[in-house]
Picture (cartoon, rainbow, N blue to C red):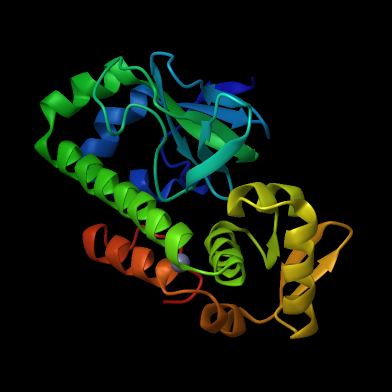
Length: 248
Ligand SMILES: [Zn+2]
């Protein structure tokens, strides 16, 4: 894993939660941050293992919290990009992880030891406050996903995920394969392909050799359920300016 010291002024690294911290809190963290390049499929922490590292994804990097069932099937519960952090955020210090954290879109992340983060949080009420606010937003995403899975159609949920990843993408290409999206939505690949075909026929997306491009963001927003907009609205109230929304 390529690692280098996080240099002052390296804003292009671009974790928006870090950038939103008070200047004094950024200065507290900066000496302990390492830039790592996370690879697709890399497991940041396995369920049941002690959480020892905290990762702040940068730019287009995204990690997911995945629950694996005893029969080997997996379901995604939340995904975290440049608006947040993975590891040691909800619990404090070395606690066992409930979910597996895995990288789904590769790229850079800032990384620090959870132990160090706990020491710094003990020194700064404003740092504790920002992390508590982010935890609240992450919980909102999980709670809304529970409601969404129970109440909304496959097409609505698919559009919701496309909006979620379009927000975090560097362009109009959603950098996920249809297989990955099928896993997130919780359906077979063939089922997802059929839904994607209807959205493509309506001009909202374009699929090309397994890649997905967003053509009509407004159309996706009106076809998706309210869940994406609800989570983003909460995020924007609790952590102003941190969510990487394309339009809102
Ligand atoms: Zn929904």
